Image (cartoon, rainbow, N blue to C red; front, side):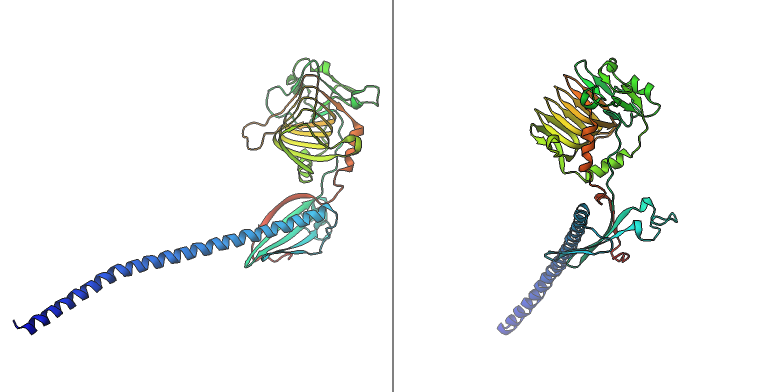
Length: 382
C-alpha cells in the first residue's frame, strides 16, 4: 500500500467514526431535549395554575371585603336598597355590592307564591370581587337581629336534652332566686327556675336532692313555661353582633359596667373561665363551658349552650338561659349541667334586663345569614 492509499484509508475511517459519534450524540441530546421541553412545559403549566389560583383567591378576598363593607353599613344604618356599593382596594383588587331589600321588592323570592311576607324580611347582597383577570360572584343575605326575649325566671332551662345525668347541683351555701336582686321585698318576683311544659318529672329527677331549699321565687320556685322565642336564632344574632369575643382564662379585669350603663355583647366558644374578681355586664353567650370563680360577677343576660359552674362566691344578677351543647370540635352527646357552690348566687333582675334593650342592634341588618358562590357568568342582580 502506498503512502497515499494509507492516508486516504485513515481519512475514511475517521469519517466513519465521526459519523457514528454524531449519531450517538444526537441519540443522547434529542431525548434530553424532549425531557427538558416537557419539564419546562409542565412547570409553566403549574406556574400558570398557581397564578390562576392566587388570582381567584384574591378575587374572593375582594368579594369578602365587599360583604364586610355592606355589614358595616348595615350596622351603622346607612345601607340602602338598590344603591350600589363600590371600592377600589388597590393593586388590582376591587368589589361591587348591590343590596336589595326583598321585603319590599314586589316579588316572590322563596317560591311560596307570596310576595313581601315576613320571611322575606332580608337584604340580599349580590357581590362581585375582582383581581386582575379573576372574578368571583357571591350572593349573601342579611337578616334582622333578634330583639331581647321576655325572660320570666332567674334560670331558664330551655331544653333538657335526652340524657339521664344530673343537670342541676347547688350546694348548701349557694342559691338561685327569682326575686329582684335576690330581695323578696322588691316587686312581685319570678320563678327561680323555669323548665319546658310537661317536663317537671323529668327535670326534678335530674336535679340533685336538696335543690328545693336553695331555689326561691314567686309564685313558685320551679315552674313550667313555653319558650316564646327561637333560642338558636337569638344566639346566632348575638354572635354576629358581638363587641367582644372571648376564650380561655380571664383573670380579673372587666368587660362592661352596669353602674355606668356600659353594657357589652360578648361571645365565647369552647371553655371560657372568668376568675379572680372579674366583672362584666351586658349579654354573654358561651357555646361550650363557662366557669366563673373566685368572686367573679356578671350583670345581665347569660346564655350557655353546654355546661356552667358558678363557684367561690361568684354571682350573676339578671338571668341565665341554658340548653344542651358541646364544646367546639367535640363529638358525642350534647351536655347540660349547672353547678353552684361555695357561696355563689344567681339572682333575677328585671331592672338589669330592661337596660339591655339599649345594646340590642335595634333592627339594623347585622345578622349574616350565609352566602353562596355564583357561576362566573351569572348576571342577575348585578
